[in-house]
Length: 453
Image (cartoon, rainbow, N blue to C red; front, side, top):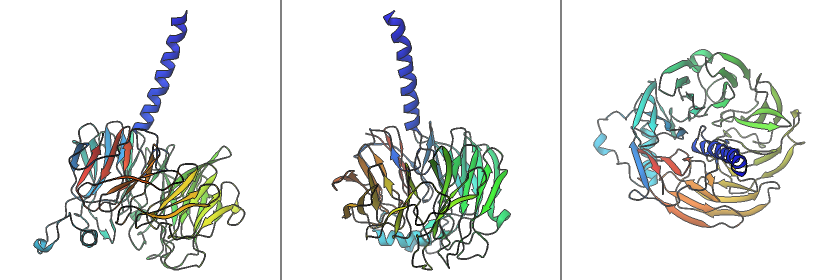
């Protein structure tokens, strides 16, 4: 009898553990399975170099800010083709140089004209397939048109390019459908190119187009059937933001409140909550641009922590809003705001539930109490260099990747402590890292690295 009762219990434990392991092996969205940069795995590497703990590395033709997306044995990355040779190519600086030089090089080198989706084996780094997405890649100061990250559910993978192409593929690389947002709804009018990643919600692909610097066309949110590309709904998102301030490079996130789901969109001076079935606006909060400045485009994506919505802007203020409410919740649902010197412009913040962390673009770290906004510590320096990638947190450690490909590992909690730094090839690095089980994936200009201790 004892063996009979223990046997199903063992199977149940095996089933639960297998499901947990499968969940931690996948990185289906640019900020991971929970859309917040939090990693479940307790075995993420902490030490590596070009000669240590590199399981494999795969050459890539050019640079991109898109995060590697992972499901099972497949990794999806986007990239332009290799840059075409120039007449004065002998004068161009090589890739492993100091930050300022590398930044200037990237600003004049968008990569080649073609945009590709690559599927790479997680086992050995071999390229399983690649598909051409478009042939109109351009440079937009600090990004090219391969910036948006893919999204996957393990059966299909979807991508939006900076040129407005939206495409769906099965896991073997067969194209399922393809659309052109600019052809259907007008040219993108952002000052620095389109960079928002899509959100997969149930059977819908939700895409935001918040723009206005170079167009009079209204901003909009659109929901496409993920299997057919058919339009479920399209909603305008009004704003009174001026000049460049209507532009946003953020990504939609999911909020679950009071048994219902909402889609949160940030940008163009407002944070808004939308019904995922219709796209209709449920609530709206102002305050992202209190001085009504004309250059307050927003890059950082909101973070959801339980009942709190954290909305970054162009450095400050950063707002913490209580979930719930309808209509204008600017004052009624404002919990706190941060207007200190440590708020970021480009990297999105991160929250472990108790503490709220911001990595400023120069690599300076600030920690706040997640519920009250009280400063725990402020403006602590990491390794010198510009940071554009958003941080991740794993097993009590925050991983901060700068544009030189240098990762600083910082202890989470109320005391700032650097646990280590690790370097790779020194090329221009914009993409946020991804994690699958015990493996860390970093995408630089030259390679995709699989790191495992």
